[in-house]
Amino acid sequence: MAASCVRFLVLFASYAWFCSASVIELDQRFTEARKEGKWLVEFYAPWCGHCQSIQPIWADVGNRMVQTNPQIRVSRLDGTKYGSIMDLYGVRGFPTIMYIEGDRTYTHKGGRTSKDIMNFALRAGGPAVKQLSDQAHLRTIQRESPVSFILVAEDDTSDLYKHYTAAAEEMILDSDFYLAKPEAIPEKSKPADQPALLVFKDGTNHRFEGEMHQDNVSTWILQELVPAFPHFTSDNIFQLFKGGKALVIILTYPSASNAKQHPHYKMREVLKEAALKHRDKYHRSYQFVYMEDKNFMQELILTSLSIPSILVFEPSTHLYYLMEDPETVTQESIETFLMSVEGGLTQAYGGNSFFRRIYRVFYEIFTSIVAMWTAQPIVTTLLLGLPSLLMTFLCYSLCTAEPAEEGELDSEDEGEEGLEQEDLYDGPEDQGSAGDHPKAD
Image 1 (cartoon, rainbow, N blue to C red):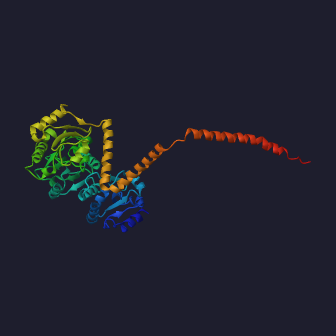
Image 2: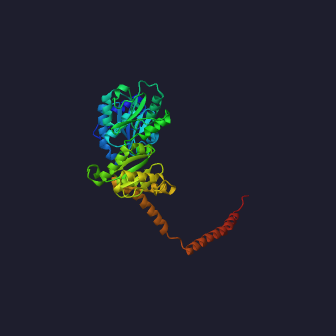
């Protein structure tokens, strides 16, 4: 039964919407077909603006997967028609992208480009730890991936290998993990003794030096998941928060990325230097990032900021600290600012209190409505306008209804009493007339 469902879905792939036969339109039969094969599924809704914007990207992913990795079936499912399948996988929003292979499921939380989605599917579908073949393979990895972890070992019998593979299984979607023989590592990067766990990023590599324990290995990997000075966006927010470090954020205009003479570019270079050249001083507690999206920053701290701004944000508490005079930032002022934050000398804003959480809920509802109206103004107006008109009509009807006057109620009561008395009077008369009938002899 399951095999026949799979064959049917593959043969009758829906391509009317995408003009591509490489994307399968799923239906209720997927409850059986999901048990066989590898599936990359987009849960969508026809009215969802974000789902509509991802259509060409999803079609491109389908075409590429057919050519490079045909064992992964790219598909989509209308969540408004098949709610039971959404409930089966705990899908609560649109669009949701999931990798499904039997009982193994992963949800994509990264970027929405074709490359990001394909990397997600390949990581989820492949082994957690892949084999690094030679030095040419390593150079390819360094060009394509900003961060990669490599365990250099002659075999897979060490405790470090066991801890490393366990951590890789848990973080399979977050990075690339490899196992390499010593000869696959260049001489300048090759560790003197093996086994050794290395992370390659920012044009160099760093070695795990902690005690040989599962928690220590996992914590070290989490702290090394991102480059020293990445671009902070909604695509990598989960990775940045996983590190457990406070974020040192500089908010600038996007033009600062292309103009080296721009004042904001020079400010960013100061923070980049602190992240790279003073790693030993800051790396354990802070993650330096730059941000160009003012709206995203506002959604994070629920208030507006001027540009440029430098602040420290703590993901665990949602507290943030603002640096004074960010335009004159230097290595010395950064160190002074971070020391004042650690010492409690800088005022904290935001937080995660009860009232702050309530405010965040209303803020997110408001921004969601604005986003829906921007994408689908007519549908949003109908969804929100019709219930509002109905409630307004009911309230108006209740408030304007005229109560019955007291005189009318009295007359009605008198009329009812008269009818009751008349019924009582008619009773004996009826009985008397009945008694007038002669009895039969």
